[in-house]
Every structure is written in C-alpha cells, then in structure tokens.
Amino acid sequence: MGPVKLGSLRVAVLAAALAAGLSAGFATPAGARVERVALPSVDMEAVLKAAQIDPRRADSALTPGAGSSVLLVERALVAKGLLAPSYADGHFGTKTIDAYATYQRSLGYTGIDASGFPGPTSLRLLGETTYAVTRPVSAGSRVAFRGVTVNTRTRAMVVEAERLLGRTLGLTQGSYNPGGVAGSAGTHDGGGALDISVSGMTATTRTAVAKALRRVGFAAWVRTPAQGDWGYHVHAVAINDPDLSSGAQHQAGDYYLGLNGLANRGPDDGPSVAKVTWEEYQRAR
Image 1 (cartoon, rainbow, N blue to C red):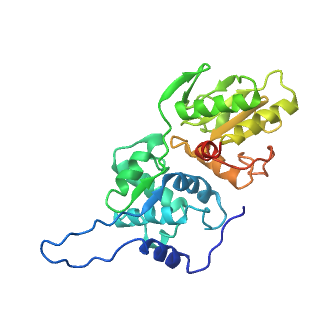
Image 2 (image 1 turned 90 degrees about the vertical axis):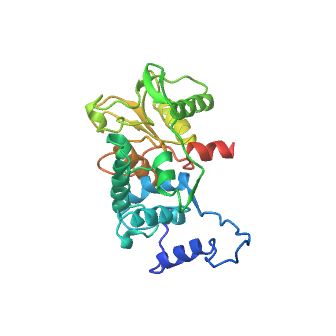
C-alpha cells in the first residue's frame, strides 16, 4: 500500500473524528449523578509504526491507521509547549520526533531512551489526562541469547522464525551494543537489532532466512560484501521494538517504504512478504 494522501482538510477531519467520541461539558444539578466520559484511545502499535515510517517519507502523508492516535499524541505535546500547533497533523514527522525527545528528556531519560521514539511509560505519562493507551508494546527484559544480548521480544521472534525455517540460527551481533561494530552505523546501539551468520548457506537458504524473519516481524535483508565493508550476513531489525536506536528506526521505516535500509536508500532487494509487526503476526496465527 502506498502513502495515504489526504487533502487540505486533513487536520479538521481528524479533529472532528476525535471530537465525536467526547461529550461536551455541562452543569449538573446538586446531587445528580455525573457519568464519567471515557478518554479517547491512542494505539501504541500504530504510533510506533508511524514514528518509524513518517520521518522517512518524502511528503507529509499519514501512516494508514495511525493518524488519529498520532494526532492525540501531538496535541498533548502542543499542550506542554513542546510542539507548534501547525505540526499537530497526524504525521509523526521529524518535528514530532524532536518534540517527543524533549518530553522524554523532561522525564529524566537520556541516550537511546530519549530518541523521540515513544516507549510505553512515556506515552502513558504524556496522555494521563487526555488519552488512554491501547495495544501497548514492551521490549521486555534484556537477556543473553546465543552469545549476544537481546530483549525477550526479539528472542521470541527469532525462535518463531527458526520454527518456520526448521533450523537454528547463529547470531554474530546482538542488540544494546553501542560502538560494537563500526560498519553497523549505530543500528545495534538499542534493542531489536541482530546480525545472523550465513556461513555454509547457499544463496537460496540465505534468502529463506531473510524471508522467515520478515514473516514474523523483522525488517531483514541479506547483506553482501559488494554493499559495504562486511561479509555475507543477514541483518534484521525488529519492527516496533520500543528500544530501537534511531538508525534502526530509520531502517524499519525504509523497509515499509520499499527500500533496502542502506545509506543509499536503494530499492528493497529482499524477499516479498506481507509487512507485519510481531504483534500483528501473533494475532494472525
């Protein structure tokens, strides 16, 4: 599906859709029962997807299914004086990323935790009085796995991809590895990133590995020596992992836009599959 382009009334339409779910305030007689109005919902899965894809777009199109949730987040940032009202448009672009990073720093977060990519705690705190968070996403805890560090969400994804493949994979680089491999350009600084050994594999098998990883929610590519200063391997980024580094976020966004995740932003050279997150894959099983 290509970018969704809306007309000049996009903000007004989104605002009207949000307002339809809210009741207008009015005075009530003393002792009368006051019904509590439910807060509108922010879908964290959709917000994370938009925060990866939207900054990589060449235009200000909206990520399908994310616009109304992103608008609520942006309005909360506007209310805190962190985002200009003109950028509250349902597009989680670079201005929204910067504003969200400022908000994260105001909570005391630093480094990867203040990259502008929403985490479950910061997203909940931002909307305490204005929205409720649905479909929260957690990276889980950090664990040792096959000689590298990953989080429990990533580990579960790899194990499921191995089940689909019918083989065990060797990991040459994991997550939370700042400065570990210079050629990785920071993509492994946070969570959700893996490099997988393809030693002894045929070209067909390498592609099958990338395909299985994509099927469970990774943006995955077979990397070749012709592309950079590295040997053959499969590079994978767990889409929607809240701990992704900025570089990994960009690669996940490029994957959705049909690109190869490299600095040249060339066309995707990997196997064609339906693009899903881990949570979407699990619901479809």
